Amino acid sequence: MENDNSNFSNQISGVLVVDKPTGMTSHDVVQVIRRGTGIRRAGHTGTLDPRASGVLIVLLGPAVRLSEYVSASDKRYQAIIRLGTTTDTYDADGQVTASSPVTVTEEEFTSALSKFVGEITQVPPPFSAVKVGGRKAYDMARQGEEFDLAPRTINVYSLELLEWAPPEAVVDVYCSSGTYVRSLANDLGAMLGCGASLTGLRRTKSGRFTLRDAVQLRKLEDSFVDNTWYQYLIPAAEALSDWPAVELTQEDVEAIRHGHRIAGSDNVGELARGISEQGELVALLGFETETKEWQPKKVFFS
Image (cartoon, rainbow, N blue to C red; front, side, top):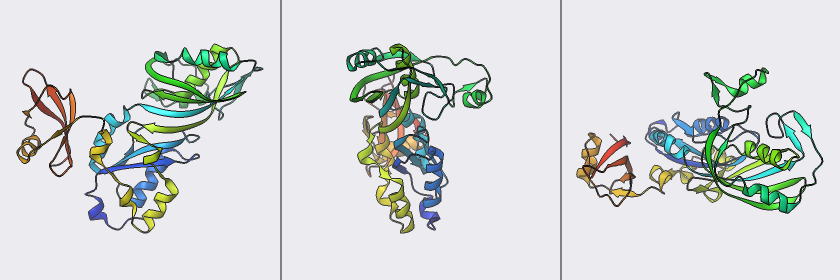
């Protein structure tokens, strides 16, 4: 049902944390939210494949301008990895390219896992949205074209084996933004010599938001019908709550709205959220060490 309170909706800025179900694209979820809230300006901050479920952050209204910062946040997943099967997509949706018997022990598996912890280089899957010469890799892969994807540097903070049930294993993956868990599974299989692919993925954390903060999509859709969805809206200021906050006086707010710097302190950090006395996110601020001032980077209220 389309929300009729369009004037009120147009003033809303905030975050909806959704527990995305399997079978839907991240864009599908955003479209459901646009229709339900009546807010056209909405976007997610990190794609989950249709097969994957879990934490999907959707920004509404002016909060969409936080996207580049929220998208860069660390992620956590529970991944189901199947040993002995390699596919062209690195997951269960692809064509099987190789099969091998699995003789790997739990000790061998955990030892191999440890090799992927830290700052590593990773090549994205050929079936991914990474662009090659302006074209998406998955479009080229579907057409059988040959191409190379450049490796990228990522950080894997921890890999913990949660369940060992060969040929499958459940692994907790805590990593930087931009990590492809499909590639991780494929590379792990190559190291073990038996091949591997990703058969299930659930994002349990994105930035500061976890599954505890997330609302099931069906429950959110029900709240659109009776117009109670606002109870799930999280203030935009909380989207980057791991950033330090600078409390702004009314004079500071006026200065920032006009693009002026304000006096600062060098013991806060390089980036901070500028919060009004009412608790609203006014701006993202960058610290200028030479002048010891906060420079507005993005201003959210005019």
